[in-house]
Image 1: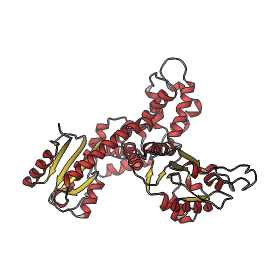
Image 2 (image 1 turned 90 degrees about the horizontal axis):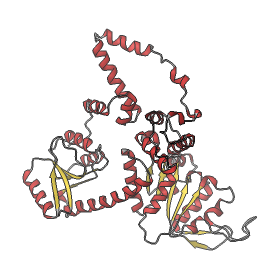
Image 3 (image 1 turned 135 degrees about the vertical axis):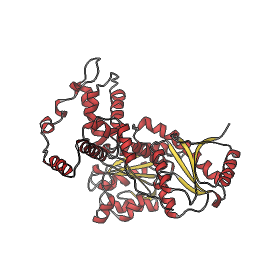
Image 4 (image 1 turned 180 degrees about the horizontal axis):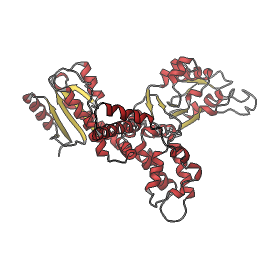
Length: 456
């Protein structure tokens, strides 16, 4: 039985070289399956190209294949490629690019990547049970979280309030492969009391200050051989930033009121809803500390960028937190989908809590279960829009000699563009807003002229 099954698609006419590669891969235990016109490949696959490949065609193919989050592509060149083309391939969605005849062990490169992907998908499947979401951007985020967890880098998690930064930090600690790691210690930097914050991080000696009636370990000592999670690190005062930097650089610290250096070895995971680089430029955050803590940076997407996860999250909250298994009326989901969530997933969760608390009996959840305080502003929604701009646009089209059908077609195309832009490219949400099928918007997107990003 083959060790791995891979789909492949050639973009090269060098048949002898391709045959040589296929023979080598099959001899090494790989099973290869060609992708034919109209096929939609899933899982891991190979594309083969050379310097004569039509890169615009290649880009179009990659865009179609990478619409699916579980499609992973290795680009294998049959000769040297310009650096600009290599980067362009990566931007277009491939995960690895190398030239088969320019490296020593090409088979091992492919095998190592596939073995890592197997491990990655197992851990992503675990994360999907904990960090719920099916959108493409969320799946990419979960894969990045696993990548970070399996590394030994310091991690900085960025994101708006309510996007799940602490949950992600806890999962990074859980997936951390250190065999004997200890606990994850959480410090909320927004709750540090001025004058005592050094004690929270580094501990203190008995009598170091008023009410210090006994010796106390701080977060660094408690996180020894484990993980220290500093939530909202941007709130840390500048003097403590300097002390934290020393502790990270030297692996040592002093308790408040002590002259004894103590050792602490831990993995640091930090989170912030601030733009720390902007804080560095303003002088409120140390540049050297920023580069020390941001070995690997991850941005959690706000809910407005993953709107297709709203229904999945709502179902999860109803079922797993409130044990409500009754059906949910479509109008409730329409309400949830068209609502704004400046507080992100946390705000959605609180809204579901209110709806669940109001729901009575064994019947379905309906719009009657939505508290009045959460109702839309019907007065604002009912205002008729000013039609003068639309009228002006129609007049211009009439003066150009366009008939009713041509005007209708232009307005329809504009509506599609506006809806897709409003939903950040999410065709499913744009189709819901327009009341049309997602297929219509897919055809619209394919019909649009696309820029050429790849150059030979």
